[in-house]
Each structure stands twice: as C-alpha cells, then as structure tokens.
Amino acid sequence: MRTIELTQMIRPAMPVWPRDPQLERTTIATIEKEGYLLKKISLGEHSGTHFGVPAHCLADGLTVERVPPEDLIAPGVVLDIRQSCTLNPDYTLAVVDINAWESEYGSIPPRSYVLVLTGWSRKWADPSKYFGFSHDGSMHFPGFSTEAVIYLMEERKCLGLGIDTHGIDPGCTDDLRSNTALFKRGGYHLENLANLEHLPARNFTLFIGPLPVEGGSGSPARVLAQCTEVLP
Image (tube, rainbow, N blue to C red; front, side, top):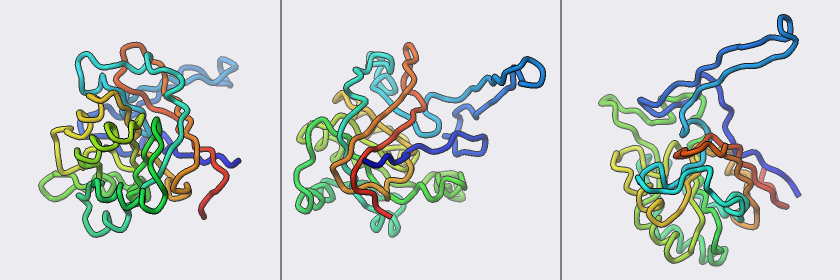
C-alpha cells in the first residue's frame, strides 16, 4: 500500500478566504531559553486543507467534535474535470460528469467521499490566481453544481465531497448553495486538497484528521489516501 499526502502546507503566505483570519504564529518558548520549543498558532476553522461539517451553514447542524470516527476513514473516488476547468474557470461538476465517470468506472460506492480534480492546486503558491480574482474583486474557481451535490448525496448516499479549490461552491457565487445542499443532507466537505492527480479514479481509502474542537464548524485537517495504485 502507498500513502499519498492530500494536505496543503499551513504557512503564512497561503491563500485565505477574504475576511477570514490570517495565520498567526507566536513563539512562546525556545530551546535556547526554556529548553523546549513551543509556538502558539491561530487560524480560521476553514483555512488550509480543512474539513467542514453541517454547523458551518446550519444553526442546528452537527459540530465537528460529534462526527462519528467511522466517518473519517472511508473509500474515495476522484472525478477528473481538469479539461472543462481549463476552458471555464467557473465550471461546476454536473450530473452528466458523474454519469460519464460511472459509465467507465462503475457506480460510486455508498458512504464514500467524492473528490473533484480541477487542477487548481497548482495555483496554491499564488493566492490571487488560486482565487481567480478579477478586476472587480469577484472570484473565479470551479466547484460542484447544486444538482450534482443532491444527486451524490441522495442517489449515491455519499459521506462527503472534496475539491482542490477553496470551496465546493464555485468562486463566482456567494450564496453557498452547494454547501447548504450538502449540509442539509448530513454530508461533510473537504476543501483545499492537494495531489489528487496522483490518485486512481477509485479503490483508495481516505484518512481524515480534523481537530475535535467543541462546537466547531470545521477544522484544518490532515488528509491522507492509501492505495495500491499511484499515478505519476
């Protein structure tokens, strides 16, 4: 088995959602003075590679510390829509994309995470390109259509959805429609994923490690995939 890192590095210059808190790090103790190294860190619940839960959009939604452990180790599949996203940065995964994938690889297994490969992770080092900011301040990056979210949650009984952009909602919208559709159906999201291009289309297992913060709407998370086939 091979283990693939799907997590972006947490660092000061990483892309952070507009109006979200920036990463702050303060040195509390040093090896030279106190004999050990300790730093205080502060960042938003949805910064970096992160795991989101229904409380993010629903007042009575499940909070992150209440997520069952069995929901954090699950099968995954990858849908590659890079070609469509190259032509249209506002592209959203559609039901037709899901049908095309299933015609080639078979039905998406229940209780799985569906990850969408857009190619956006290669822009991570440049926040302006990653968000796709235009001259008027609007953002342009791919996401999931609401119809695809509903189809995956209701017809395929998925646990959650993931993507290598800053949101499952495309950047050109600001209504969180896809997130809300996901959370109303009890799903989770993974955002700002990395290295999806190295995963096979199916037959791998995800290991998701959010912090169990009491009352949290989500958490930065280490996300790993274990599989027998690794793409170059």
